[in-house]
Figure 1: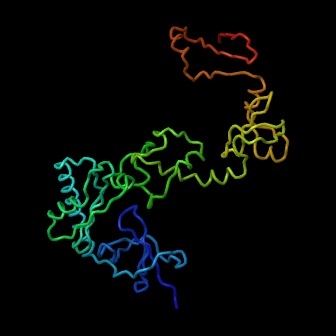
Figure 2 (figure 1 turned 60 degrees about the horizontal axis):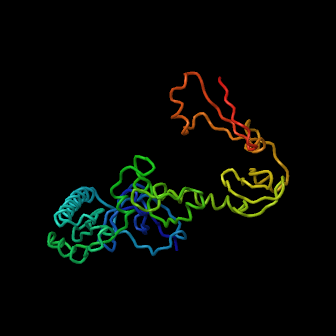
Length: 330
């Protein structure tokens, strides 16, 4: 028995991919439209994948109803306009009833317009009664079966679109993320990202989806490095790991009487120092015991030196032995 012709379809742009059996229509290609039967009735969808191995599909496959015709595509455009009108009607109702904590993501008609599903989020309004809301909305669509489905704040952000918290013109969820995955605070900790809420939360108020992008890489990189606070043996003696740098495959170790030193994973394994090519090495700063204040970093002293003569610059070098600061003019 030949393997079925499995295709992947989307009901909306940047939406979740669903798999169907198109063995009765082997000529269908990517970009073609098909009519499929779902729990919400007949729907029109677009093919974005073909010839998918049956072994990679875990869900039960249903056959497609038929390929879409030109008439179906015109009818779909009319349905989209009706969905926009339905969303506007519900938004006006929510404003009039002072239910400002309820957000509507979208509305979806079945292809035969017999069912209408609203996707809303009401987490901000704990007093919201979804049954009363459904009864009120159903009266406005007497010839249609109305369903209300609760969605999360991520789905609302995806539907609304707009700029991301990082500054991108289009949010990741609206641009290319087809499904939402579980994001945990552990992902931020593993990547040593600041846990300040404004730094790790998106426009939806949840942890940013991008915390997942490099998480697996960091997890793999950290497996080969000693953990923080661990006592290890280095080419310069025994010390405690105070910071792990997975991207450079190195760690910073605090060695008694010598201070913090950076060692690569290779140096820890071989037990010898590998010469660095950079002109300014971190170890050199610690060897001299000198603290350098960069010229481009603004400090409190900048306010006191506003009337400084142009062409003059002050540089402070402070040693650990308590030597007095020296000033030099360039």
